[in-house]
Amino acid sequence: MFHLVKRFFGFLTATSPSPRDQLFVSQSLAPNLQRLFYAQRIEDQRHAITVATRVRGRPHLVEAALMHDIGKTTIGLGAFGRAFATLWGLTYLPIWGEWLRYLSHGPIGADLLEAHNATASAVAFARYHSGVPPSGFDTNDWYALEDADHA
Ligand SMILES: [Fe+2]
Image (cartoon, rainbow, N blue to C red; front, side, top):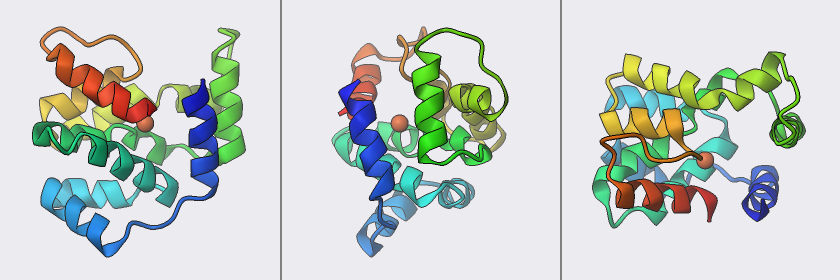
């Protein structure tokens, strides 16, 4: 839960990727994925770079880290709408519209990544993140990504 509060304030104070961050992104992603990456809100770009920096020691995970929340690109909610959806989602009560789409950003993003020929790891992490590792995904890699996302 603490990571959600931290994420909320991080969202409000996010800054654009620095030239150094942009170099990291360009060295880590194919051009079509870079375009997708920069279609994200600045706040989501910042979060993705933070997550990717934390798994830098496992270079094969960097694409998954940079692209895992890409499904949020298609959803028109700001910080408060996202916070509401997240908290409401914890109640398991019915939810609809953009809030439901926000809570479904994983599968939405995974489909988008599949259509852009992302790696299988990036597609799987986008689809199932904040859950248990899907079969075939190295458990250590999975939890390295999960920990980086929630730190
Ligand atoms: Fe995330």
